[in-house]
Length: 182
Image (cartoon, rainbow, N blue to C red; front, side, top):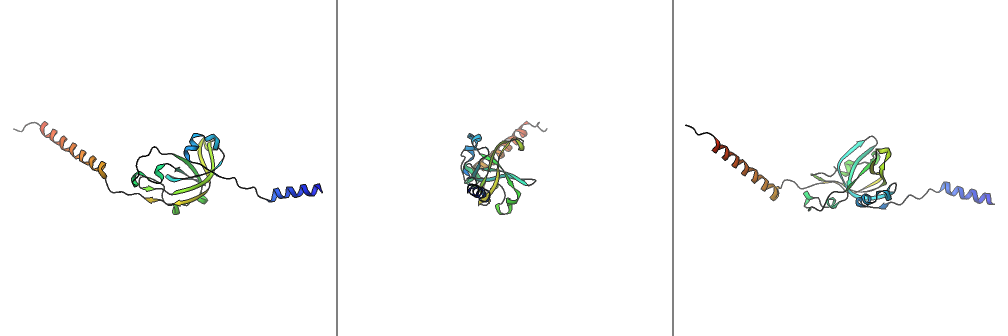
């Protein structure tokens, strides 16, 4: 009887898949403050894909920012609110979809907002000491969108006015410095 119970228990262990590890929601500042606590852990992080989609073999590298500019970039009307904070992502090409996401964030675009699940790697030896999230799942929350352009605003108009004034002063100084005709 014990043998039957033991084999039944082993069969259940082999047949029933292990429950997937629960992903802990974090932000970049938490990863920066205590990276060893998260090294090797499955995490969830949300933010804006920025910079460039760097295709490298069977993966794509991109930066994910989760700072105040994610929702309200300065070119879109946001105000300065501190520095940028982000983390590198390594996304398998089979879940990479730039056609759906749109271009990464730049001065011209607010990049796609995504929710990422993956394993945080701190100074990964097999990746030359890089720190990144090895993505296992990515969900698009909001695709990329163009940022407003064209309006110079007060700083732009002031800069142009100062350049014109400098050119006038330079021309007047050159005119006065030239030898008299005669």
